[in-house]
Image (cartoon, rainbow, N blue to C red; front, side, top):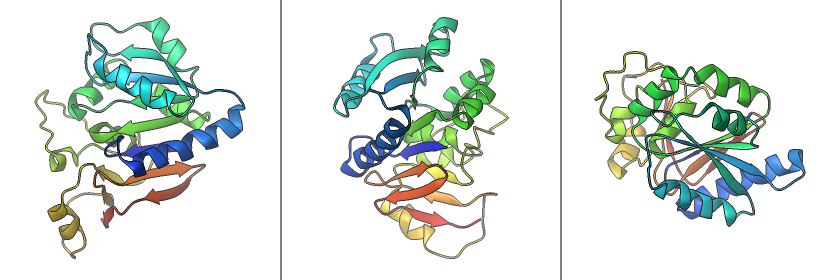
Length: 212
């Protein structure tokens, strides 16, 4: 599996992680990479999509597939998305995003995409979608306003993730304490990122890990 989990995609370390992922995928694909984008919520002006498109262009990759999960959901766009080399999960409201993915029955589809060799990039709060559960989302300020009960996610890695980790969270993660969650948690500051290439995890920057 080829996966990247980013806190802030605009930092040098996040860009390094993206470059590592894309280079690994390109070695397998052998062509200019096609990227697909799943919006975490409606983006009528496609503001964030266009920003992300420019970012991938800087890596000589083409972002040309946009999928919205709510009122604008399109089956043809989904088919195009699943033919892409990389799928980008945009940042946003993690609870709302996971709820929409479940409503469209896309979790098993994305799991199979990853198992089949497709790469996934998760950004900010929505990097948590890649993990076993988004139960750690309140630690980065997300609220479960949509009353989502089942917090299980893609489960493509064996740890949980907290983006935008503060200095206080990083310090507390180093201290021994009673585990609050079933899985180990990665507290990832803005200038750090994780990339897993064929199951081998690489850490870029200095996140902190809290054992379960």
